[in-house]
Amino acid sequence: MPPRAIMDDVQNENSIEMIDRLMGSGELSAGQRVYLETLVQLVEAYEARHHAIDTSDLRGIDSLKHLLDEHGMSASDLARLLGVHPSMGSKLLKADRSLTVKHLRALASHFGVSPGLFLD
Image (cartoon, rainbow, N blue to C red):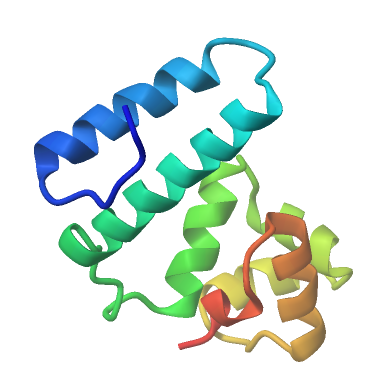
């Protein structure tokens, strides 16, 4: 399957199938790694154009709550992560207190995301 621009959902699904096969095949050669990365970029570009998810109504606190849930973390875990008093975790999640720049940096580093994800 030669790499080329994805024009429809069928081509997108075929590209995803090839990505899955490559990812499950074990050790890849240098050429296979480049091919895989090319396919991933093509799929990302197609999906960004045709299947983008509208996140304009999401607030930064919603993103934080989702990440905490995905990582099995509680408000107390959040407080420990940020190095604040244990009661601050729930205050931050209720939006009774605001995240500081230091908090944003710690969260971004911990979750591997952009600090802007937590801003409204």
